[in-house]
Structures are given as C-alpha cells and as structure tokens.
Length: 264
Ligand code: MF3
Ligand code: CO
Image 1 (cartoon, rainbow, N blue to C red):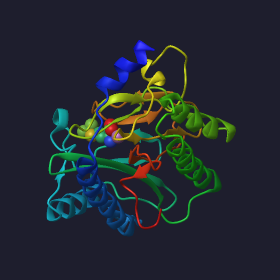
Image 2 (image 1 turned 90 degrees about the vertical axis):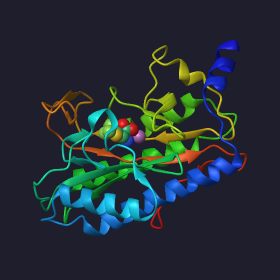
Image 3 (image 1 turned 180 degrees about the vertical axis):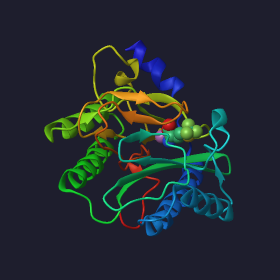
C-alpha cells in the first residue's frame, strides 16, 4: 500500500558501515550499564551513579546524549520503584528492596545507542522480581518479531501480549522509537496495539532500520503522572514499574542487538 511505502521512506535505513558504528555506540552504552550494575547496591546515590556513567562514557570517546537535551541535567535517567521514566539523579540513597531502572543514551561518532536495565537492590519481594522478569521477557518477545518483512505491529503486539498474560499493564503514554543519527527518530514503537492510534503499526521492517524497543510495565494501573520537576513520570497508583530497552538493527540475518551485554 502507498501508506506503508511512504512510511518506509521516512524511516532511515542505515548502511552496513553505519550499523558497525551504531554497534560500537551500543557496546559503549552496554559496557556502561554493566559497570553501573556492579555499583547498584544499598547506600549509593543516583548522583554517584550518574558521575560514574558520564566519566566512563567520555573515557570511551562517547558523549551522553540526554545531558542538555531539552534542558535535561544528567547523563542517566533513574527509575526508582514507581518512577516509570526520566527520574533525575539526586542525593537520595538506594535502599534494599527497591527496584531501580537505569536508562542511558550515548553517542559515538555521531550515532546513538539507547538501553535500559532494571535491577534489584539487595533482596526484593516476589512481585518485583516477577515484574522485572516479565518486562525483560517482553522485550525479548518484541525483539524476536523485529525481522525484515514483518510489520512493526508484530513487535508491539508481542510485547503487549506477554505483559498482559502475566497480569501486568503496559504504559500507554510513552513509546519506543527509531534511533541513529538522532536519539529519537521515526517510527514510534508503542508497546501495545490500539487500531488507528499509530500509522507506524503498518510499517514493513527493512534491513538497516534501527529501533529502540522499550517496554515500560506497571504492576498496577497503566496510568502515569508527571512530576513537579516536569521530567519524572511515576505510576498513578504508586505501585512499582519496570523498564528494559535495547537498540536493535533489523538485518537479513534477523535482529542484531547492538546494546547486548555480556550477561544478556
Ligand atoms: N531513553 C530516553 C527516551 O528515549 C531518553 C531520555 S533523555 C531525556 O525517552 F533527556 F529526555 F531524559
Ligand atoms: Co529510548
């Protein structure tokens, strides 16, 4: 259809040489998250984590993409407990029993990589563990559908089905996105399908498309609310939220996870 043809034109397809640089960017982001993982212990502050991330990124020749973006003041976004996205690092100490997401975007030679992990601080209860596991598995299920020839809706649907089968809810107000020369590029990648809400559902995935797939999953209501700082988004009911994200490239040989970590 002409509609989907038009979509395919406006979504960038990166060359194999560019994918190679995007992979380097992704690997620096992945390495930074792995380093942060070792520091995610009770007592550390998110401001300390932010410093570690910025220093490491810059030492690799990369630049924090979020810092200065629309005035955002930090390298990482921190998602403690009911924070869904865009929490600003501060001097509060992490506590045993919390789940904490770290969302990091870095650019290397002008190409961006974007990835998020959610981690348990010490021991967490069974619901939080399951919430993290379901969210990470939902990301995997979405990535599995990111194959050349598939429609984007297959990615969105796979994520939603996995989450809702588990009795959790996908956030409706935030979506994944294309990525590459810009941190946010078309297409929009919702973690749900509502017919007619996004024309990008019909996009046919092509080799060279680079996607940041990022389910945000709430234990309770899907509803979120914006904080007074105009950045921090929390669940409306105060129950916990988890978030996992990878930057992937669609290729002839299946999805390539550019932000793949050693442990995953
Ligand atoms: N990974 C976040 C996103 O895709 C990056 C936010 S950077 C910020 O929305 F500056 F907006 F916080
Ligand atoms: Co993102």
